[in-house]
Length: 366
Ligand SMILES: *Cc1c(COP(=O)(O)O)cnc(C)c1O
Image 1 (spheres, rainbow, N blue to C red):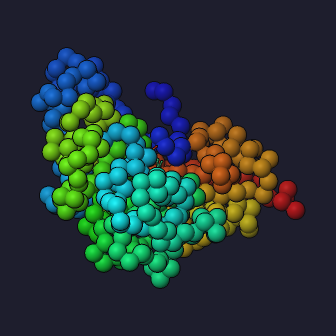
Image 2 (spheres, helix red, strand yellow; image 1 turned 90 degrees about the vertical axis):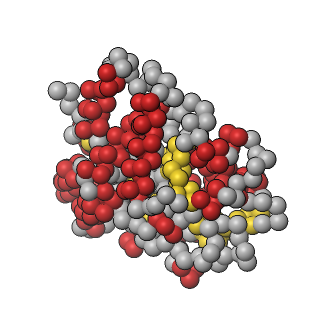
Image 3 (cartoon, helix red, strand yellow; image 1 turned 45 degrees about the horizontal axis):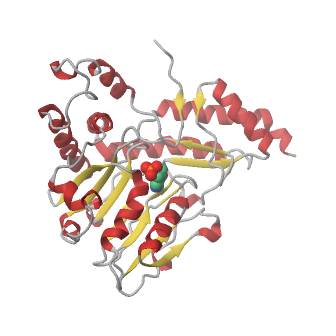
């Protein structure tokens, strides 16, 4: 048995072991075809079944009905930064963005190349350590939509409420916390996620879109950019990333076996609090980046007293099989990404390691 590490990478990220095992088992001969899933036609019965059951399983886990379609696209969440305004931000309209981190900022920048935008709130002045409260949002008079980022992967903050915005379509980038907790997803008209954090491997992007939004898609746009094309063809307009979609389907089935987002949310809360406790009980040896009320249960970001100690921390952690902990360059320090597939045990071991590292090194703080 090859030993696996606890992989805290932010994305691509750790996958559930049973999913990898199942993929290995089926790799050379998918369901008696004598071929791997990478080698069969995307128009085959086998692949059509995979994509249909991935959509059905997603809707079930998300608690959504047939008024929503689940599309499996390419181009990452980054393509959605452009496709959304390209489709829904028509001339004379304004799109509202809430800027709570680096990806939210990118989404806004892309939209402003296409049309009028308005920043409904920004937490840049707090170093993106907070999420704005409802009363801090100032929407423009009649926006085409309101866009937010439910979890800020780099800074480690997460929305704990869904903003009220009346009849304005609410759109969210959920790349780093999709299906990680119980949430009323019917409040969203469209949400999307690159799969490589919480759903599967890189290469496929999930876009969940309400029928009322599909009806707004203009006819005179290139087919590949049209959500309607992809909905009408069950995401088989062109060749999809078959292997990524297949793994994503296995991840969704695994998630269902674990009890779905509700059970996962409880577990993720428990996992995160182990690590936050290690931060809070360290007498300021570890300093969390996010303000407590806005802490993410997916990406936990913190600094140590010096950069030297941070480097030693990362080295010693890696030697214990805890990898992928280096923080993003814009925050520095340490980031533990603990998506759905990170087991509780990985967080227990990391929290223990943090406590030991703190007691061995806290004297150097003075
Ligand atoms: C990783 C990430 C992205 C970028 O996703 P790509 O699939 O690489 O384009 C966008 N938004 C958030 C919140 C992310 O975490």
